[in-house]
Length: 119
Image (cartoon, rainbow, N blue to C red; front, top):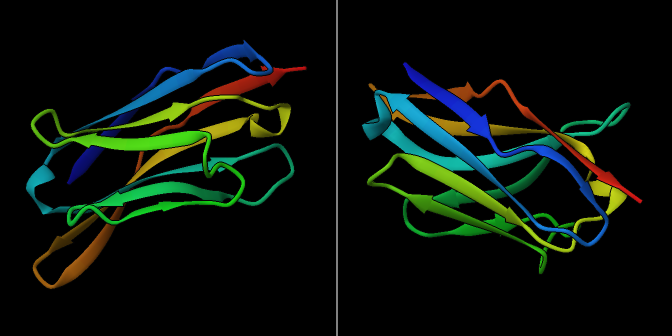
């Protein structure tokens, strides 16, 4: 089992920056990829950014060049630095971890943190 706890959400103005944090605990040694997803009101959940153990990084086109995902393996944490925020970035942001254990891939989620960008 892996537990994920996000923090750092809030209300900011357009153009501001915000950094989200996700702390993992439990059987963290099995984690392969950590990612950030978001879901705006009335919208489908969207993969925002991910960072695999081998260093492969993914960004959605909507955040590429503005957001930076990073990991601190010593702290079992993943971060999402969000710059030049836009109202369309408003969403609940959730941390996700893929854990490969005993030939099975498990999917873990945090509870989510609200990010609201005012115009």
